[in-house]
Each structure stands twice: as C-alpha cells, then as structure tokens.
Amino acid sequence: MDMKPELNGDLKDGKQNRRPAAIDGPTNPMVTPLLNDLYQFTMAYAYWKAGKHKERAVFDLYFRKNPFGGEYTVFAGLEECIRFIANFKLSKEEIAFVRETLSPTCEDAFFDYLEGIDCSDVEVYAIAEGSVVFPKIPLMRVEGPVAVVQLLETPYVNLINYASLVTTNAARHRFVAGKSKLLLEFGLRRAQGPDGGIGASRYCYMGGFDATSNCAAGKIFGIPLRGTHSHAFVSSFMGPDEIIDKSLKSLDGSQVCEDFVSTTQTWLSKLKRLSILKGVFAETNPSELAAFISYALAFPDNFLALVDTYDVMRSGIPNFCAVALALNDLGYKARGIRLDSGDLAYLSCETRKFFETIEKEFGIPGFGKTGITASNDLNEETLDALNKQGHEVDAFGIGTYLVTCYAQAALGCVFKLVEINNQPRIKLSEDVSKVSIPCKKRSFRLYGKEGYPLLDIMSGENEPPPKVGERILCRHPFNESKRAYVVPQRVEELLKCYWPGTTDKKREELPTLEQNRERCAEHLEQMRPDHMRRLNPTPYKVSVTAKLYDFIHFLWLNEAPVGELQ
Image (spheres, rainbow, N blue to C red):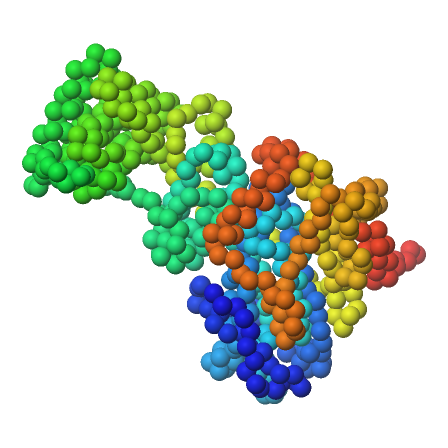
C-alpha cells in the first residue's frame, strides 16, 4: 500500500495542503466520521463557538489495566486508524444530519467549517501494531486542532479496543496451547455480528492463530482457511446405497478404483478381524460410513472426518480408518479426524492408540501420526486442563470464548487531553488509576542483560532519552515509595510517526498483517516467563522519569482544589 503523501497545490490557513494518496478507506465502510458519539459534535461546536477550535491539542490513547487477569496486552487496530484518518471527510449528507441533530440555535457557519475540515493538520504517533504493550503507556499520541482531534476520539477508541482485546485473547490461547499445536479460529457464527466476525478472524491470526473458517476474512486478508463438514452432513446419509458414482482415480492418475465403497468395506472387515481391536468396536454405523466415503470421494486429498456424530470409538474412528486405508491404497493420505464432544483427553489418546495399531499391523508408515483436531467450546482453561491431563490433540478449533472475549467484555481504552497550546493538562480522580499523566511524552522500553524487557518509562518530550549503560531513576507515576535505578543494556523508543500531517517528519510504513503477526510472536517470545504465566503473573513495571514524576505531582497539587473544614 502506497502511503506517500502528495501535494494537492491548494492553500489552507497559509499552508500548502498535503493530502494522502492511494490509501484505502477503512475495511468496514461503516467507519465514517459519523461513527461517533454525539458529544464529540456538541464539543466541536462549543470549541468553534468559543474560538478555540484551531488550538493545538495533544491527546493520549491508552488503557488502564491488562485484560484477562494477565500482565500484557497486544496492540492492534492501528492500520484501520490510519485508513480512517487518511480518508476523514464529512459528506454533505452527513453534515446535514449533524445539522438536524444539533440544536437549532447552532450557527450556519459551523456547518461550513465542518465541510472544510480534514486531517491534513493532524499528526499521529503510535507504537507498532502487534507490539506487546502495558497500561498507562500511550498506544497512540494524536496532535492537531482540538475540534478535529476530538472527532477522532470515539472512532479511534472503537477501532483499538476490540482489536487489541481479541488479539491478546488469541495470544493467550497460543501461549497455553504451545507452539507446536495448530490453532484454528472457528468463531464466525458466534461472533457479535459481521464486523465482529471479520475483525476476530483478522486479529486472532495476528495473535498467533494459524487459520480461520471465515471465507470473507480469507479473501480480504489472505488468512489461510480450514474447514470440512458438520454433523448435518454425516446424518444426512442413510447408507452406502445412496452413493452413485463409486469410482476414484489414484493420486498419480495411473489407475482407477471402480468401487471405492467396496474397497472401504473390505478394509473395515479387516479391522474387525484384528484381534488387538476386539472389544473396541463391532458393528459401525453404516450411514456414517457412507458419509465418510462420500466426502472422501469429493475430497480425496483433503479428507478429515467429524467422528462423534454417533459414537467415537465404536463407529467414528473405525469408519474413518477404513476410508483412510482405502485412500492410502490409491496414494492419498487422510488429513485426520475432528472430535467435537466428549472427554477430549481420553478420546484423543484412545484414537492415537487406534492409529498406531493400524500403522503397526498393516505396515503403513505415518498412519500413527494422523491428525487429531478437537473443538467443542474450548477456551484457555480447557486447553490448560487438557495439558495437565495429557492428550494427543494436534489442532484446536476455538470459537465462542475466543471471538467474544467471554472472559472480559472490553479493554477499556481511554483518550485523554494531555496538552493544549503547549500547556500540560491533567485529569484528576479520587481513583488514582484514573489520574492522567500530563504533557506530550516520549516512551521507551528498557532491556536488561538477559535480553528481556525490564520496564517501560515515560519522559517529557524535551528530556534527554535514556542511554545504554547509563543509570536512570525510574519512578512509579503515583506511588512515591516505588522506585528503582536501572542500567539498560538496550533502549527502544516506542512511539513512531505514522501520520505526519503537513510536517516533513519521517513516516513509518504500515506493515502487512503477516508482518504484524511476526512482530507479535517476536515480542511475546522476548517477554520474561513470569510476566506471561496464567496464574499470578509478575506485574510488569511502567514508570516515569524523576523529572516527569515531580511535574505530575506539581500539576496535581496546582489543579486540585483545597478543602476547608468548618
């Protein structure tokens, strides 16, 4: 995607107006300037009425607490924010609607003003998408005319909140499942509407999932697709007599099996005669066998069967193996089975034994490693329990609990004014966690000798940055007793310019989804294990410099009213 700005030659407010070229709009066409809270427009009018609308303001977008009881979050949604700002423009129809919505006392000139605004004079600084992030550290810093930036608040918080939450949820599932397991996102049908489904597929892939069942997401984002059949397909068959075309050409095309049904039934008879399998099954369900045969005839090179429609060990597994062995005769290798109910740990272990028995008894290399996929309302806790019980599952299909973020409804991002007209501003609260950190800031990640991040630190914009090998005092923003000296072995500045507005600042290119996915995996790998564990993780330190600490508390005392006792 070409993100280079071009000059359109128009003059606006004495400046040559730069307009971004060739940047697509948001993925969801509903993301327009009207995807906003009404109070953003009422504030915009009040700013305009007071003559404040062009005052230069700085806002921080951040969150206050890590989700899911953990100690890390993955930042996502930045690309959609840049797409939105690059195409920000109120249409005449939208302005007419705003006019109808606001008070009839609003002056006409305000709506002329709305017609002329865009984001050419806005600057956006952000942490790279896919990065591991922590509370209080600005994910994005947005600078520009206060009325315009105010109109970005609700869309930006909306675009970041769910994206970061579900990416983090996916990353947590990946951490529990382990690197070797295949993770499949199956949540479309349970997601909160079409946009929730598309967004979940995109950001679960970023967070470490390998594929999705969502065809639209596959087309839009290039995410690998996975899926075979449901119980309905299996139960729709009555028996093998329904199969009309029974022929199947071998993988290399050298021969044709004229009656694949009979070949499968022959293999099923061989399985029944194995003494080692006696007592495991006797007669299998013939309609299930017919369904498996039919599916194998349709997809001989991608045969994966759902085996729990009737009985997993007494029918599903033997029927699958008979079809898989018949396919093997023709050079095909069956992909595996899916378990969607029952005791997944026990059934997967028994299934693996069955596969290994066939490999040994019939001398078929690799059959014992035939894939086992599990689904059925899985979540973090289920995966953790399966690991503790011991299982033989190779892939997990996860839906409802993943895409709905069942364990936590929202991340809780906020968008706070920290400076206007070069004057730092602070938001106070009796709840210390809701006190904002004032002024335009820089953020750094400090790394220790072992390569792990030690902490993140914020400083005033004009403070000298931390340097490798130089001791720096790091302070908790609000608790004076929490402080530590750090001698960093590596220093990483977090905020980069992703939208320079009319300035000549270097702009970061937006990475691809694949690159964001790789960054996510790399950042998670860098984290210290005790920060990552599911239960009682060690809190990651977020700090400020001594100078910023002093300024926060000076401004706090300056702005807080002094009480009087009678």
